[in-house]
Length: 300
Image (tube, rainbow, N blue to C red; front, top):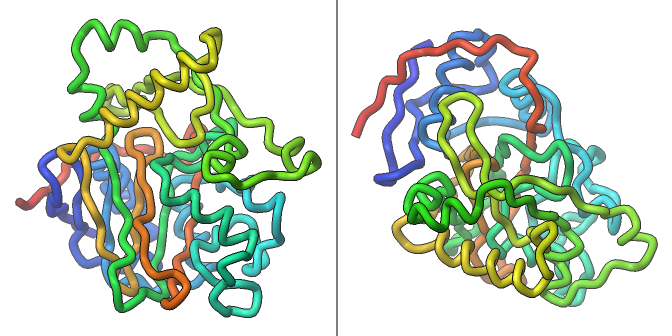
Protein backbone atom coordinates (compact mmCIF):
# COMPACT_ATOMS: atom_id res chain seq x y z
CA UNK A 1 0.00 0.00 0.00
CA UNK A 2 1.38 3.41 -0.96
CA UNK A 3 1.51 6.09 1.74
CA UNK A 4 2.48 9.74 1.53
CA UNK A 5 3.41 12.26 4.22
CA UNK A 6 2.31 15.90 4.37
CA UNK A 7 4.69 17.90 6.55
CA UNK A 8 2.92 19.95 9.24
CA UNK A 9 5.90 21.87 10.67
CA UNK A 10 9.23 22.98 9.18
CA UNK A 11 11.15 20.64 11.52
CA UNK A 12 8.94 17.63 12.21
CA UNK A 13 5.34 16.28 12.27
CA UNK A 14 3.50 14.92 9.25
CA UNK A 15 -0.04 13.88 8.36
CA UNK A 16 -0.27 10.55 6.58
CA UNK A 17 -2.45 10.02 3.52
CA UNK A 18 -5.80 8.25 4.14
CA UNK A 19 -5.25 4.74 5.44
CA UNK A 20 -7.19 2.30 7.64
CA UNK A 21 -4.61 1.11 10.15
CA UNK A 22 -6.88 -1.66 11.44
CA UNK A 23 -6.36 -3.34 8.06
CA UNK A 24 -2.63 -2.74 7.69
CA UNK A 25 -0.73 -5.97 8.12
CA UNK A 26 1.72 -6.11 5.20
CA UNK A 27 5.34 -5.48 6.10
CA UNK A 28 5.94 -3.08 3.20
CA UNK A 29 3.35 -0.60 4.51
CA UNK A 30 4.43 -1.01 8.12
CA UNK A 31 8.05 -0.39 7.11
CA UNK A 32 7.03 2.76 5.22
CA UNK A 33 5.26 4.04 8.34
CA UNK A 34 8.30 3.27 10.52
CA UNK A 35 10.47 5.17 8.05
CA UNK A 36 8.03 8.07 8.36
CA UNK A 37 8.46 7.98 12.13
CA UNK A 38 12.24 8.13 11.70
CA UNK A 39 11.89 11.14 9.41
CA UNK A 40 9.17 13.18 11.12
CA UNK A 41 9.06 12.00 14.76
CA UNK A 42 5.27 12.42 14.95
CA UNK A 43 2.65 11.10 12.50
CA UNK A 44 -1.04 12.04 12.37
CA UNK A 45 -3.64 9.60 11.01
CA UNK A 46 -7.23 10.77 10.49
CA UNK A 47 -10.51 8.83 10.75
CA UNK A 48 -9.25 5.71 12.53
CA UNK A 49 -11.89 3.31 13.89
CA UNK A 50 -9.96 1.58 16.66
CA UNK A 51 -11.46 -0.07 19.68
CA UNK A 52 -9.10 -1.06 22.50
CA UNK A 53 -8.40 -4.53 21.12
CA UNK A 54 -7.65 -3.40 17.57
CA UNK A 55 -5.46 -0.53 18.81
CA UNK A 56 -3.39 -3.00 20.85
CA UNK A 57 -3.20 -5.39 17.90
CA UNK A 58 -1.94 -2.66 15.57
CA UNK A 59 0.66 -1.50 18.10
CA UNK A 60 2.03 -5.02 18.36
CA UNK A 61 2.20 -5.39 14.56
CA UNK A 62 3.84 -2.01 14.20
CA UNK A 63 6.45 -2.16 16.94
CA UNK A 64 6.29 -5.23 19.17
CA UNK A 65 6.12 -5.42 22.96
CA UNK A 66 3.92 -3.02 24.93
CA UNK A 67 4.55 -0.87 27.99
CA UNK A 68 2.23 -1.91 30.83
CA UNK A 69 3.98 -0.57 33.94
CA UNK A 70 2.20 2.78 33.99
CA UNK A 71 2.63 4.95 37.05
CA UNK A 72 -1.13 5.21 37.52
CA UNK A 73 -1.38 1.48 38.24
CA UNK A 74 -0.10 2.06 41.79
CA UNK A 75 -3.00 4.36 42.71
CA UNK A 76 -5.90 2.84 40.78
CA UNK A 77 -7.07 -0.16 38.82
CA UNK A 78 -7.68 0.72 35.19
CA UNK A 79 -11.36 1.07 34.32
CA UNK A 80 -10.45 -0.41 30.93
CA UNK A 81 -9.48 -3.79 32.35
CA UNK A 82 -5.96 -3.78 30.90
CA UNK A 83 -2.73 -1.96 31.68
CA UNK A 84 -1.69 -2.09 28.03
CA UNK A 85 -4.19 0.69 27.22
CA UNK A 86 -3.84 3.96 29.12
CA UNK A 87 -7.03 5.86 29.90
CA UNK A 88 -6.25 9.45 28.89
CA UNK A 89 -9.52 10.97 30.01
CA UNK A 90 -11.23 12.97 32.71
CA UNK A 91 -13.69 10.16 33.50
CA UNK A 92 -14.07 7.91 36.53
CA UNK A 93 -14.91 4.19 36.63
CA UNK A 94 -18.60 5.03 36.05
CA UNK A 95 -17.86 7.11 32.97
CA UNK A 96 -18.62 10.36 34.78
CA UNK A 97 -16.43 13.47 34.87
CA UNK A 98 -14.05 13.25 37.82
CA UNK A 99 -14.62 15.55 40.76
CA UNK A 100 -12.08 18.31 41.29
CA UNK A 101 -10.90 16.64 44.50
CA UNK A 102 -10.52 13.19 42.93
CA UNK A 103 -7.00 11.91 43.57
CA UNK A 104 -6.87 10.42 40.08
CA UNK A 105 -7.52 13.84 38.56
CA UNK A 106 -4.69 15.35 40.61
CA UNK A 107 -2.39 12.61 39.32
CA UNK A 108 -3.36 13.14 35.68
CA UNK A 109 -2.88 16.93 35.81
CA UNK A 110 0.86 16.31 35.54
CA UNK A 111 0.26 15.36 31.90
CA UNK A 112 0.24 19.12 31.30
CA UNK A 113 3.97 19.17 32.09
CA UNK A 114 6.42 18.55 29.27
CA UNK A 115 7.29 14.87 29.29
CA UNK A 116 8.10 11.76 27.31
CA UNK A 117 6.16 8.59 28.07
CA UNK A 118 7.60 5.83 30.25
CA UNK A 119 11.06 7.36 30.68
CA UNK A 120 10.73 6.27 34.32
CA UNK A 121 10.97 2.61 33.21
CA UNK A 122 13.76 0.51 31.71
CA UNK A 123 13.22 -0.31 28.93
CA UNK A 124 11.54 3.03 28.34
CA UNK A 125 8.78 3.85 25.87
CA UNK A 126 9.48 4.01 22.14
CA UNK A 127 6.27 4.86 20.27
CA UNK A 128 3.10 6.20 21.87
CA UNK A 129 -0.15 5.86 19.91
CA UNK A 130 -2.98 8.10 21.14
CA UNK A 131 -6.48 7.68 19.69
CA UNK A 132 -9.27 10.23 20.13
CA UNK A 133 -12.64 8.69 21.07
CA UNK A 134 -14.46 11.72 22.57
CA UNK A 135 -13.30 15.28 21.88
CA UNK A 136 -14.73 18.40 23.61
CA UNK A 137 -16.33 21.20 21.63
CA UNK A 138 -13.61 23.48 23.00
CA UNK A 139 -9.87 23.19 22.27
CA UNK A 140 -8.25 20.38 24.28
CA UNK A 141 -5.03 20.10 22.36
CA UNK A 142 -1.69 18.32 22.68
CA UNK A 143 1.59 20.13 22.07
CA UNK A 144 4.75 18.46 20.79
CA UNK A 145 8.40 19.56 20.76
CA UNK A 146 11.22 18.25 18.55
CA UNK A 147 14.13 17.15 20.73
CA UNK A 148 16.32 16.44 17.68
CA UNK A 149 16.09 20.01 16.45
CA UNK A 150 16.63 21.24 20.01
CA UNK A 151 19.86 19.25 20.23
CA UNK A 152 21.01 20.49 16.81
CA UNK A 153 20.51 24.09 17.95
CA UNK A 154 22.93 23.78 20.88
CA UNK A 155 26.41 25.18 20.44
CA UNK A 156 29.42 22.86 20.39
CA UNK A 157 30.45 23.69 23.97
CA UNK A 158 27.01 22.81 25.39
CA UNK A 159 26.91 19.58 23.38
CA UNK A 160 30.29 18.62 24.81
CA UNK A 161 28.95 19.20 28.33
CA UNK A 162 26.07 16.79 27.67
CA UNK A 163 28.25 13.89 26.55
CA UNK A 164 28.04 10.85 28.82
CA UNK A 165 25.60 12.48 31.26
CA UNK A 166 22.99 10.14 32.72
CA UNK A 167 19.67 11.19 34.23
CA UNK A 168 17.38 9.55 36.76
CA UNK A 169 13.71 9.65 35.70
CA UNK A 170 10.94 9.24 38.28
CA UNK A 171 7.19 9.59 37.88
CA UNK A 172 6.99 10.21 41.63
CA UNK A 173 9.18 13.29 41.10
CA UNK A 174 7.05 14.72 38.28
CA UNK A 175 3.82 14.26 40.29
CA UNK A 176 5.32 15.79 43.42
CA UNK A 177 6.18 18.86 41.35
CA UNK A 178 2.45 19.66 41.37
CA UNK A 179 1.90 18.64 44.99
CA UNK A 180 0.69 15.08 44.42
CA UNK A 181 1.96 12.72 47.11
CA UNK A 182 2.30 8.96 46.91
CA UNK A 183 1.97 6.82 50.02
CA UNK A 184 5.11 5.06 51.23
CA UNK A 185 3.82 1.77 49.78
CA UNK A 186 3.07 3.38 46.42
CA UNK A 187 6.41 5.17 46.27
CA UNK A 188 8.24 1.90 46.96
CA UNK A 189 6.89 0.57 43.65
CA UNK A 190 8.19 3.55 41.67
CA UNK A 191 11.98 3.35 41.74
CA UNK A 192 12.43 5.10 38.39
CA UNK A 193 15.14 4.47 35.79
CA UNK A 194 18.40 5.94 34.54
CA UNK A 195 18.88 6.95 30.89
CA UNK A 196 21.43 8.96 28.90
CA UNK A 197 20.69 12.66 28.48
CA UNK A 198 21.48 12.44 24.75
CA UNK A 199 20.15 9.61 22.62
CA UNK A 200 21.23 8.56 19.14
CA UNK A 201 18.72 7.02 16.75
CA UNK A 202 19.79 3.50 15.75
CA UNK A 203 18.15 3.92 12.33
CA UNK A 204 19.24 7.35 11.09
CA UNK A 205 21.96 8.44 13.54
CA UNK A 206 20.20 11.66 14.58
CA UNK A 207 20.89 12.79 18.14
CA UNK A 208 18.23 14.14 20.47
CA UNK A 209 17.84 15.45 23.99
CA UNK A 210 16.09 12.97 26.26
CA UNK A 211 14.21 15.20 28.68
CA UNK A 212 11.00 15.11 30.68
CA UNK A 213 9.26 16.43 33.76
CA UNK A 214 10.19 12.98 35.13
CA UNK A 215 13.91 13.88 34.95
CA UNK A 216 14.75 14.22 38.65
CA UNK A 217 18.54 14.51 38.78
CA UNK A 218 21.78 14.11 36.87
CA UNK A 219 23.80 11.17 38.12
CA UNK A 220 26.97 12.21 40.02
CA UNK A 221 25.94 15.91 40.09
CA UNK A 222 24.70 17.82 43.13
CA UNK A 223 20.91 17.63 42.94
CA UNK A 224 20.26 21.42 42.80
CA UNK A 225 22.84 21.92 40.03
CA UNK A 226 21.44 19.02 38.04
CA UNK A 227 17.85 20.19 38.33
CA UNK A 228 18.71 23.73 37.28
CA UNK A 229 20.66 22.38 34.32
CA UNK A 230 17.74 20.15 33.27
CA UNK A 231 15.29 23.02 33.66
CA UNK A 232 17.43 25.23 31.42
CA UNK A 233 17.56 22.48 28.80
CA UNK A 234 13.78 22.02 28.86
CA UNK A 235 13.31 25.78 28.43
CA UNK A 236 15.67 25.68 25.47
CA UNK A 237 14.00 22.62 23.93
CA UNK A 238 10.47 24.03 24.17
CA UNK A 239 11.07 27.35 22.47
CA UNK A 240 8.32 28.22 19.96
CA UNK A 241 10.36 27.24 16.89
CA UNK A 242 10.55 23.64 18.11
CA UNK A 243 6.82 23.24 18.95
CA UNK A 244 3.63 22.21 17.19
CA UNK A 245 0.07 22.04 18.58
CA UNK A 246 -2.22 19.23 17.44
CA UNK A 247 -5.95 20.02 17.53
CA UNK A 248 -7.85 16.78 18.02
CA UNK A 249 -10.70 15.44 15.91
CA UNK A 250 -12.63 12.27 16.74
CA UNK A 251 -10.86 9.34 15.08
CA UNK A 252 -7.41 10.90 15.10
CA UNK A 253 -4.52 8.60 15.91
CA UNK A 254 -1.24 10.35 16.65
CA UNK A 255 1.96 8.32 16.95
CA UNK A 256 5.11 9.91 18.37
CA UNK A 257 8.64 8.77 19.05
CA UNK A 258 9.34 9.27 22.76
CA UNK A 259 13.08 9.16 22.10
CA UNK A 260 12.93 12.18 19.80
CA UNK A 261 10.09 14.36 21.14
CA UNK A 262 8.40 15.72 24.24
CA UNK A 263 4.70 16.49 24.57
CA UNK A 264 2.15 17.91 26.97
CA UNK A 265 -1.63 18.20 27.19
CA UNK A 266 -2.95 21.75 27.16
CA UNK A 267 -5.50 23.00 29.68
CA UNK A 268 -9.23 22.92 28.97
CA UNK A 269 -12.41 23.02 31.09
CA UNK A 270 -12.09 19.44 32.28
CA UNK A 271 -14.83 19.90 34.90
CA UNK A 272 -17.33 20.76 32.16
CA UNK A 273 -16.43 18.81 29.02
CA UNK A 274 -15.81 15.09 28.51
CA UNK A 275 -12.55 14.12 26.83
CA UNK A 276 -11.62 10.51 26.20
CA UNK A 277 -8.51 9.26 24.43
CA UNK A 278 -6.73 5.89 24.62
CA UNK A 279 -2.96 5.44 24.49
CA UNK A 280 -0.82 2.42 23.78
CA UNK A 281 2.97 2.69 24.16
CA UNK A 282 5.57 0.27 22.89
CA UNK A 283 8.84 -0.56 24.61
CA UNK A 284 12.23 0.54 23.29
CA UNK A 285 13.47 -2.97 22.61
CA UNK A 286 15.24 -4.47 19.57
CA UNK A 287 12.58 -5.17 16.99
CA UNK A 288 11.67 -8.75 16.19
CA UNK A 289 9.90 -7.71 12.98
CA UNK A 290 11.77 -7.12 9.70
CA UNK A 291 12.93 -3.56 9.09
CA UNK A 292 12.90 -2.50 5.45
CA UNK A 293 14.25 0.75 4.06
CA UNK A 294 11.41 2.12 1.90
CA UNK A 295 11.54 5.31 -0.12
CA UNK A 296 9.41 8.01 1.50
CA UNK A 297 6.90 9.92 -0.61
CA UNK A 298 6.42 13.38 0.84
CA UNK A 299 4.17 16.28 -0.03
CA UNK A 300 4.44 19.87 1.10
